[in-house]
Length: 317
Image (cartoon, rainbow, N blue to C red; front, side, top):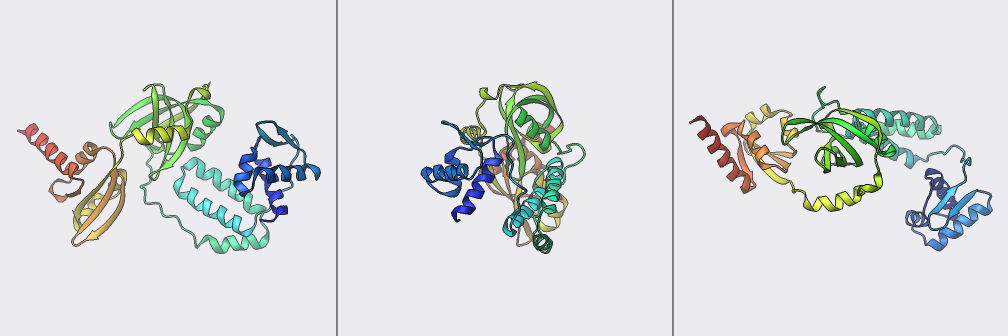
């Protein structure tokens, strides 16, 4: 990137945040801090009102705005890809907001970029194998959660925990959201459990943003949560089971709720691979399929199935 293009990009970066650290600029453009200082000085000499706070970063003086920004073809293609991803991997609220934003972006594209996007649109697809969310769990709260995060407001919600199958009312002080293993999660301090918890958003039945604020500085950051709890939380088991082909069709979409990540035909059977943390919960689901399922791995699940079968036998005896 030549210097003129870099100066323009730095100016756009400055307009995108209240304060931008010199280290952020250096990292983005892979330049030294000394070069950053020279570039900022060049912008100031050109009449751009760039202010600086010692030890904090640079900012644009209030009231200064760039003229409307034009996107090049590659940037427009990247945005189209993002739109396809959001349409499948976001919830109902965020999907609508992103679609509205894309309409505004398309409106400012040059004619040849619009033609390029139209020709490209039919050739990009994101296939989501997750089952659709029913009316019981509307899956439309991502925008509200983002609002509460930005304003530091407490959330109230009714949450259905899969491993206990119990609906509970929670008050949560959110610290972040993340997308993991095909689902969006809300991470926050749960006042009911007095600890940090992750909540799968498609398991939230009702949610409201209160007008009660909380002290964000009392909590760890999202990165700290991920670094700390990824080591202590139970790791998911990789489970492989086989069903006869004719029988496998009866399972339908249930397999997705139990964490299926892959399936393949092996002889006259369909082998399915799941990622699941709770062997007992998964094993009790397998019991519903009787002798029509064969556990391939792990060995712990095979042993647990024997215990569950004995439990059922003793119950009916």
